[in-house]
Image (cartoon, rainbow, N blue to C red; front, side, top):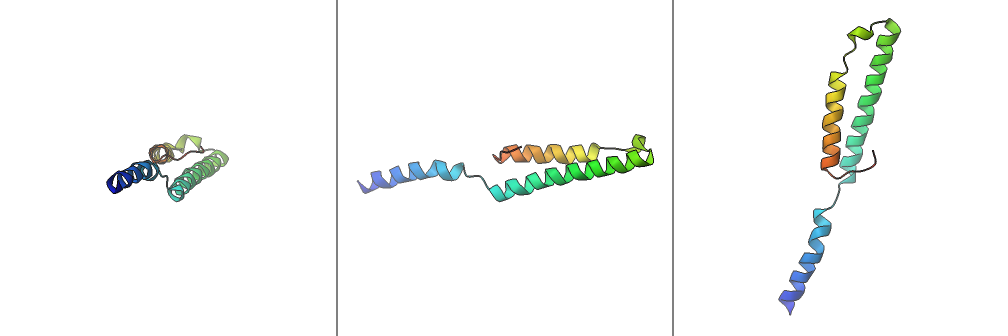
Length: 80
């Protein structure tokens, strides 16, 4: 009976720990995405004001955002 009870408790407890989401990591990734977008917008505004939009390269910002979004979804975060 003890073996049955212990294995039953293990089966019930396992899925809750396997699906746990670390919300601190999710918040950090979300902050990175927001900060990257603000930096991109600030550089775009500066280039626009100086009339040098042709020199604006948003590739680094897009790469960071794509990697962060991929990690955000992989970790089971939600809210975007």
